[in-house]
Image (cartoon, rainbow, N blue to C red; front, side, top):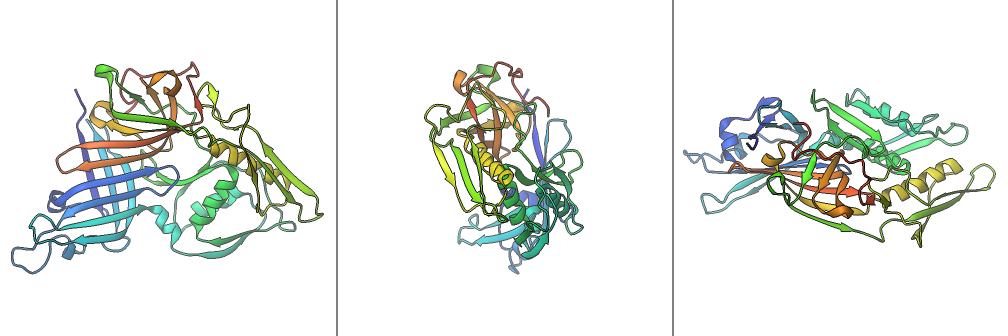
Length: 378
């Protein structure tokens, strides 16, 4: 029996009114590994019966940085928080047709709070991961840091790490040069905001199994895949030591991340090589790490896109976690990393999840444990 799906919307901590919920035509929530999570909703507008104004719009429900939260419940399970965000845009559309006027609302997750103030600040004698922990844990945000240590600490008498820009811009830059991801997410149990700074967690236990074209077990409406064969690269970088002018170099010929399939995407035969420049680094350890990060990113060359039948899947697909795919042949079946999920809820009760998956290898590893047909946990 397909699981029933319901959702709850709160505004500044208060449940949305029945009138507002009745006016909502569509909700989209985008869960993304590389960008801030976004919430978009569209509500119907109508002229009040006394002609004094417009419903919803003139109620000033969605002011600047109004806090909104969306959660969903699958069957009899506990509510699953999808996003806590802040309104950043509204757009009205007005028409002579009584049913043609709408209000579109856009909200961004708590990343927006880290993007309100540009700073110039020194971070002496600190590793990049120390900086991430300090920023996420700042009292202005109160996020819970989920940070994995980086190896390199710059000494103040050699090199002082200098921030120029907003906190999120700075952390994204630090993450990129370490081959890390940097994002905010909600703790699935408490709903608290967590600040993540670590390598992709792509090789953990899969959150579920997406099944394509396998009769009653099928839980995917559509699925397509492609292999971007010229995307993977090897990388070489050379720079000068700021103290003695000596050459400092780094080279990476394969991905350091665990392969999700039998054959790595970065080829050993006739690889494509890139030369990295303008690094702003003076030590070989930093240069090597940067080159390795460039190769690791390039290896995500196998891309899959599709749409989940939410009721048949029996759960919520989450970005930033792995998922298993079966039914698409031995080359493309196996474990993937979920890059993006677009949740679409409409007023007629439908709920679909459109996804983008990536992996850094093709073929089956042989240790995949495909579940019988739906989410491993709901």
